[in-house]
Image 1 (tube, rainbow, N blue to C red):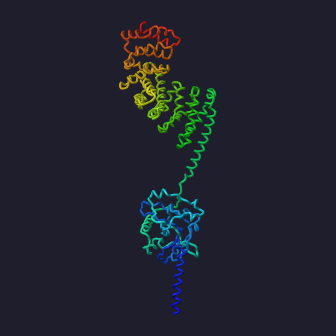
Image 2 (image 1 turned 60 degrees about the horizontal axis):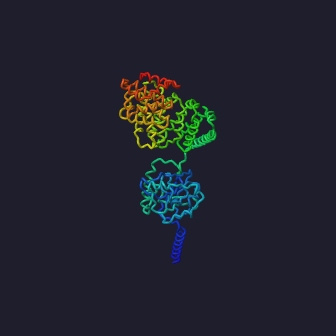
Image 3 (image 1 turned 90 degrees about the horizontal axis):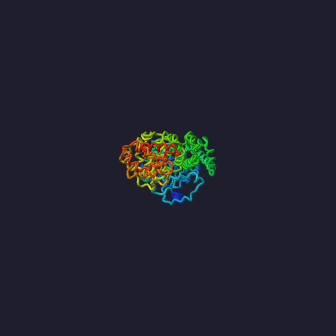
Amino acid sequence: KDQKKKKEKDKNKEKEKKKQTKTKTKDFPLQQVQQAPLSQIVTSPPVFFQMINSSPESQNPPIIYQQPQQYLINPIQTQPQQIYFEQLYPHAPGSDFFDFSKTPQTSVDNNPQPVAFVNVKHRRHEHQHGHEHEHERDHEHDRHKHGHRHSESLVRRDVVDNSKKISKRSQSNAPEHIALSSNLSHIHSDFKAAVQDKKRLSYSSITPRRIKHNPLNDSKQIESKTTFEKSEEFLGRLDQLKVQFDGASKRQIERFATLELLNELKEMLDWSLKTKKNENQRVVQLRACQILENIVIDNQSCADNVLQSGIIDVILSIINSIFLNQIQMVLLSPLFEFIEICNTKQKLSFVDKGFIPTMHRLLDSPDELCVNMAVSMIERILHASSILSTQGQETQIKGIIEQDGTIDKLVDVLMNDEYKDEEINEKAALAIGQAFKACAIPVGYRSEVILTIKRITNHEDLYMSSVGIHVLAGLAECPENHEDIISADYQSDISKFISQKYDLIVDYALQLVLNILSHGKADSKTIETAKSILPLKRIRELSQYRDPIISENAKLLIEILGN
């Protein structure tokens, strides 16, 4: 009887001990599983595993933390002591294991670590540690991208040997040969699928890495640093030049415009062309072009240095590298102003630099001002070419712009009625007219071109009027254009031009009449008509004029008319 009483007392004591252990682990209960009498030596530390969706496409790349030490796993012990991961590995990545927004981690063999399924609320503020900010990882975007979902709140724990303070694993998370001999009936079906997927992925080679925002490698960091320092150096120098040029007189600017300064500006623009596009690179381009514009405005003495430096070629390359809707007038202004100060031969040198194709591209710009400047520069190049060609000779550039389609593009600009500024259409007509000097304009747009030029000849600006008359005189070198030139009683307008006091208008008007009479049918009827229209008294006076060209043309005209 005494023995039976002792046994009952022992049983009661064991029950009380079990109750006590249950109360101690009330906050973090651990499901009891069948243990296998087996220990294993592994070369990787325990890593906490978070439950994820078992679909193959939802798997994140494994994240690994390795240590060279060996850890003894003793799955026989039944009363584990609760510890945190930071206590074992305070410097390990991902130690903030109570934050469920972080990407789950796996061991080297991709076997998941102990997980206790507990329906508790996530309260991060109750489990803060010293390395929270240092090891925090933000992979919220990646988790949503791969469709990861957490069906239950998880508390991740390790199991520790009380005597040796060495972590161990639960039997449900032992390696494959142990797990197969254990009873896994208590494990969630989703967890089984996750284990199988991890085993499948374990055959692929895995390299240890940490997840963080990938920084630039050393070479890119150095390149980025040097690019920033270089841009700051150039911008500082450009600020000095701006202060130097602001308020400077024309003579001072001419003295500043040395070949060394132009080469310095070219170096800046060349650097901006080869550097990856960024805000500083863009500012360097714009400020350098502003300085160059200040140098070339009304400064013919710098033309040779500008051409010698090669800075024009770099600007053309920059314009070609920028989208049409992003090209600013600051880039075009130095080209526009430089062409105005160049002589005829210097203007024609632009053709070899690829100037025409660049301007051809700008004709498609959505910015009317950009189109206006492009047409104006093309017209100036064609004007220089027409001046160098002799009487009755075609321009050399005509074949070039016909072959690359620039003529067709100019015709499109001429026919475009949507431009708010009619000057664009007028300059396109002047460019086409000078391209067809001594040539018949195609019938499809001949009347439109000549009609627009005739309207320009009556412009309020006397210089623009003289330009229009000069273009008509070049077209009059071809008899096919005469009918459209003298249509709508244009002879009376020619008589008014001869009576003008502006020398250029008088000179080109006399040349126009001479070309019509000399290249057309100068029969008696035509001559009598010319006599009845032209101011003969004014022509006789001009034969004695101080300008030798005007005087010579007046004498030739009197000779043709027979008076």
